[in-house]
Image 1 (cartoon, rainbow, N blue to C red):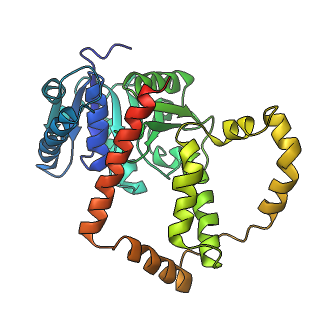
Image 2: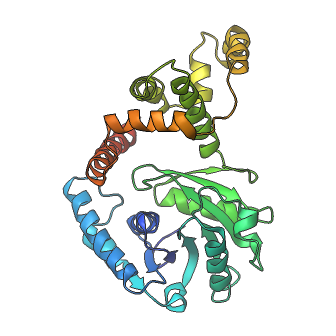
Image 3: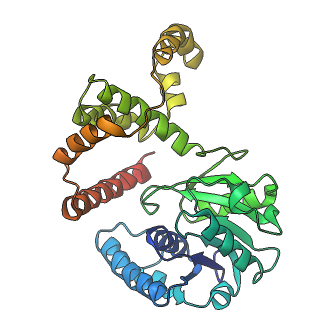
Length: 317
């Protein structure tokens, strides 16, 4: 798929919308940013200009084009019809509210041709619900990015039950072409794949802290200095495959009994509320104060580290 002359419309100019606009522009696409609040789309382009300049200065700008060339591909719009003109792909990135997303797609469908792909950035709403009011759900798909999408390249592609295979293929091709790492879900499921795995890790980590087995600081170190070290490059299936002399079958023969025993001892789903939540929140806030300044500084540190890791992963053979 050539990006030359092709237009993508991004609806919503918040963090995710701006990130998508930067990703698509890095691949050479013209990007029209729309927001229904007058002036916000223009403000987003101003913010993107600043970010692209900083990325270029740090030699972390994605794509083959300069920051000024990428910026020239962006335009801001307060009028939806104008924003959709000539687009072959629409990426919705409004706040996580089902009614709001349904309303957006109803409005968009009236203004675009039947061949235009309609994509949602939702992180937790099922495609069958998001697109329930759309007349042609066969051209609809969820493209769920991971925050921040510019550094974390995974995109979960989740189909509506009616989504055509050609729509999944075209979206996968587009995401690959702009440097993301798309994964296909063969059917919709609550939480998709990433959050189901993430919530399982969070639940067990929470239980271990709640039961006094380990501290907040140390359970985070279990991930950042242990599991996360290898999970940055290989997943759990390959980890098992490499952790036994004769591969996955050998791993299962050696460890399946122990895995079943430990998993059977796991407690119920935590409530994430009450006294335990207050205690764990207090412990976390002592490590990183829950004020805008410390949190912003820590997020900036996270993004800098992710930028470095993205660079390292790009350089690996």
